[in-house]
Image 1 (cartoon, rainbow, N blue to C red):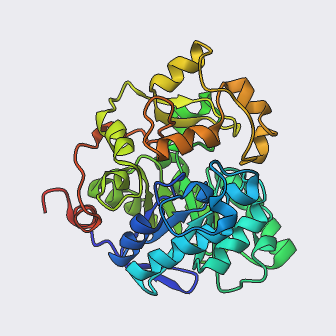
Image 2 (tube, rainbow, N blue to C red; image 1 turned 45 degrees about the vertical axis):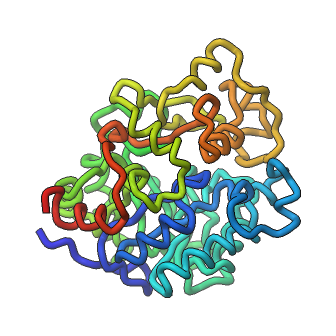
Length: 366
């Protein structure tokens, strides 16, 4: 089966592969820029840009050892630098930004991404009913929500059409095998009726009711055969995150990559999260410390996600997600939180983005 290009809004994605937005610091300028350069869609994560200490920073950001409050944890100044660096790699090829709907100050972060040069915004971690309002001053920026059910897409389209006479430029369907936060409750992630190959076709049918909205499949997709399977089901393209961790250009710390390389099927688990959704990652010493009540002290400094309620939910689950993801970015294997999709244990090599894109488009042995 030929893997064809497709359009999101006015932008053509040459190869139907979207690199998932992974924060903190997993998909920033180097990874996203190189994926777009190779014809896919690179996605810069807006999460935790204030901890991005390895590039030129403004004094306002760099004077903090740890980002304080949402306006520093989600730094518009640093996001702009990340986009500038990515553009040096991919030029004017399409480049996206992932902005979590659960983020504190969501509207401001979305606008910062548009100002930084994002061609499209991808939003999950909640149903982004107010996304068009946040983006109303940027009509050329494509809007791509993430959903898990046909009902959710129907509710979203009705609201967008009524309030802003706008529809999604594409929609991502994420099944419960993805890395990071899920769109289902813990028990629901294991039900057969919630798996990607089951939820994808009804969402494609719902999308047809609203016009020509391309549907992108995500969650547990690993290789060329998986991509073909999803496109045979009617997807216009796929989104893949974990596979791109195994690239030279991935912005993650080498220790982060090694944690995924060392993971096994038994160590990749659904974990509790202060965001209010289960999240998939590698069970490490951090989870043991949480169970033994010896994990690092919780003090809400970053105010990163609204559902955490300024650290109240962090205390319930036993850890601050901003601090632990920041530790993972810094390569601290004892206290870091390492998200991965269900297939992360299959990662066994670090190759270039160019080589990976070739494998995904043509098959592992091509």
